Image (cartoon, rainbow over all chains, first blue to last red; front, side):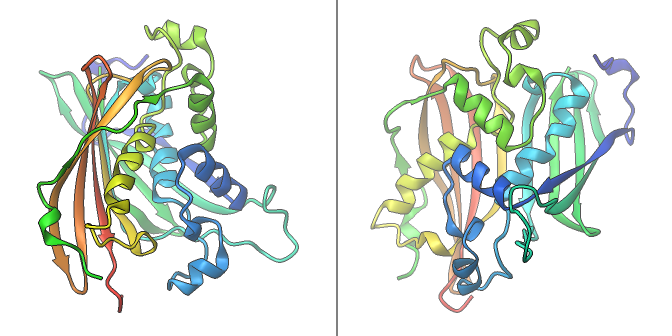
Length: 146
Length: 149
């Protein structure tokens, strides 16, 4: 367990990479109940003006927070979590690949302590979530209760 | 059809309760690539003081999006779901969600702002147990793109 007293603003909590392929999007659609076809049908996605199938914003948000859950050791300690979705995460379906095995799109996630509230014993973790160096989530902040 | 500006302030009462199941928690956790054992094993959840499997931090989106669906399906709203883009999302947990919870979501349409030919709609779901205990507040901003956007 992390000791709240040892935390300092600006401290890194680590980083990770999430890989997302078409099978992951189908799995997330089923688990969440969000069956918007822009997340699984290429024709529909391009017809509505997208570059192709894109990940659910909530897939990216939901997977990015795992860095915080694992760091603090208790996912129930995340009492507040917010983000703005700024850029789509395209998930390609390359010729000849198996959509379940393909490495997919790599989303980079890192986190740092953005603020500490000594009285409430909370730490705000600011997540940086990028795709090829461009932020896909903005103001991604998770508040952890100690 | 354009977005009805009079939607702001509207409240949709909770529909049928959502029963949080263990397998749904495991399925959702796997879908967001969560690995913490408290989502999968009762012993691990108990070690953190939870009486059943612990849901991941964004699990409440299932309940919130069901509530949003009421608004989108309301013919009076004028929202075309195929033109909806999720713009931002916030979860505030009053207590963790665990398997066995029976949840209700009361949907509030907080703001409707015209943007170009479309609109930005902010909704808030107040999620409670069927016994009235506050569990979570979720806030979603949905951008409904206009015909030419």
